[in-house]
Image 1: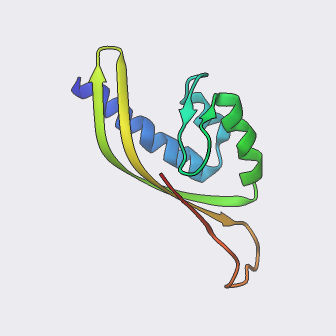
Image 2: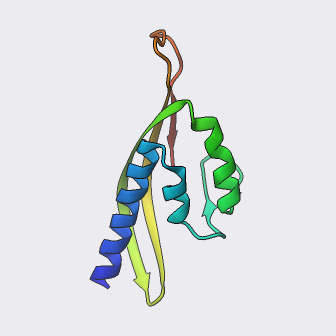
Image 3: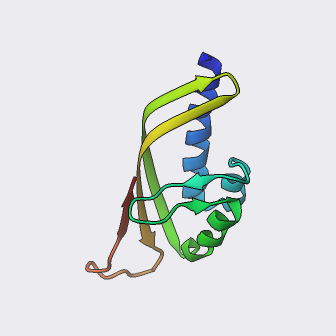
Length: 107
């Protein structure tokens, strides 16, 4: 089970790295077709296609995400992970006014 936990930790690191690089295809390759994202204040985002659809809005932004893994449990072929995730989305602009909004998401 230790190997499974390490593989999950590596998946999280790869996901964050690919997100920062803007590599949507890599991120999509890390998830199942029936993935469900739970985001505070939003209805569940269901499926890989729903996630992919949101990514075009981020093409003109830089993403800086950090995760704090709280718990990983592996039960045979099943596992879950609880993560405190912080995502900062910064618009890509040559000269952004100091008062321009920066979006922060936490889940």
